[in-house]
Amino acid sequence: MFKEFCNANNQPVNVDQLITVGVSLQKVYETNKTEANQIFSNQDKDGNYFDYVIIQESTAIALSEVDKYKANVKMLVEKIHKNSPGVAIYIYQGISPLSYTDSNFITTHTKLRKNAISIMSFIKNAGLLKIGDAVKDAYDGKNGYKYLVENKDNLRYGKHTLHLINDGGFLQANLLYATIFGKKPMIPKKLLLIRGNGYYDSMRKQEVNEAISNPEALQEIAFDNK
Image 1 (cartoon, rainbow, N blue to C red):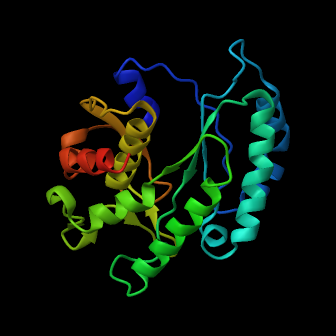
Image 2 (image 1 turned 180 degrees about the horizontal axis):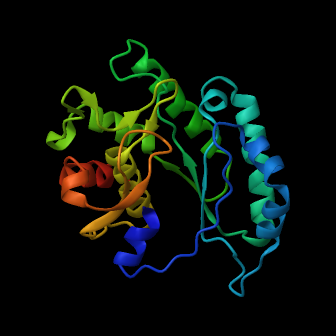
């Protein structure tokens, strides 16, 4: 969705991704080692192959294993800095894995935030991608946003692990755009969005005003957390 925003706002970007869902950064690297090493070896004439990098550790490690979190991030940053010494690196502030109504939601949110800030502090030219704060603000009803639609959470869904769905993904893409470019994106009329709640549900182009419950409020929340 972030790239859709960039295209719609005449902000051309090339996006490289290394993703293995639900595992540590170390495992992501090991699983995608050939592709990763190729990406890390790429060069650009301006001296930085990457301009921006988002690093997201698994929630379990980001929450409870700070030493491993730091070691994994350090390992990746060293590889990134070889051909991108001036890159801006953003540490992804994770979302509490618990339901908003769980009594420990705030405790886990606060711990994830604290740990992400501690990781950010030892990296050159680093910032915090405040996804956790933005999602909490949405749950709290900031800017008039209501996360419950017909008594269902419109930000996240999951039987065992909660993941962002349309409203949450829209919030995240807006926040990433605002964090990198320092401004709100123009919202396209249509975006590629899931048709249901499941992680593997099919996606298709849908009207934003029909598939996103309150795009204006979510964009304001995102911009306030940039």
